[in-house]
Length: 390
Image 1 (cartoon, rainbow, N blue to C red):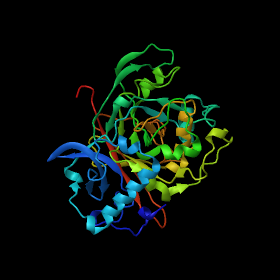
Image 2 (cartoon, helix red, strand yellow):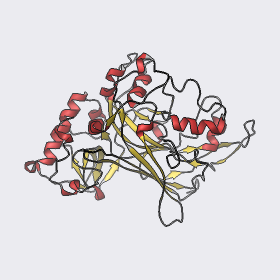
Image 3 (cartoon, rainbow, N blue to C red):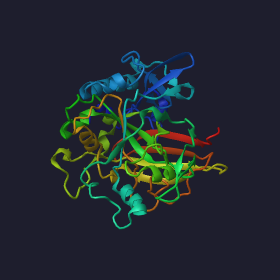
Image 4 (spheres, helix red, strand yellow):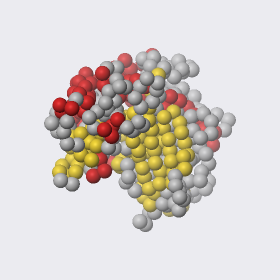
């Protein structure tokens, strides 16, 4: 940790100093924005209710060039931004967030979605394999599938109900039509930093250098389509129609005060997955759903990223262990973040529904806080379900 984490640090922008604000000066999340008087997308930093334009020190139309920097240079840039937003000498005009248009933060070349919550794996596994809900390989490797980067959309984008093949029986025959079991999945997304070269794995001791920052991620899922098509190769059209992410990327440097002990694994992971002892992060995540016609939203889930079985570092090390190429801006999803007990189920499949109807609005939020630190937030990730014929 360094001076950017000092809980007593204050910004000359007063909204950043409001208690409980998602974007105090200890956070400094990156995003891409434009304004009515300057429609050119450019990189910026959220500070309170405003956006600091990065063009004077790092001109870029996406975060990919920033993600490509070595960790040491990213840390230096963060210190520079922190000084500029805390020292009145650098006081300047900021863009009101309420008047800005936010864009996808990066050009996302590839998207991989993991299955890193043992609680989620057990809860969903019981639905299909009551006698053996968790398969033998789960505790040996971070299970994942390759998603569709072209379907990643920014928070606020309406989600059109998809169609696909649906069958009431595992033996078929199927029918074709709109999903009747549309679900959300509460996840944390992590953007890849510098990446590796083809054929060269990233050792887990260096995995942290290749993690740029996190965002909220909703991996929308059509469960009835998924159930039929997943035999035997896994999900396809049931997930490739949309994945929502929040606009602000919280740099890994901002999360340093919230590191916690790496989860205990039994059996012990293979050597290439044995990393640092403090690779977990204390991040609280929530799902709120406002049902169509209801007066307000209902909290459906509150879970903790501490309950994940596999860490972000283990996901990246395993992903590259066969020499797979990861590039700056690639996105990895953690998989549904579920915890033990009621109220910590990260998707509706775990609770038995009811599933989402047209007009329902799903909002994810999250934050990290601990004694002696400044609370930082992840913002929100929102999507409203619209009908296929909209």
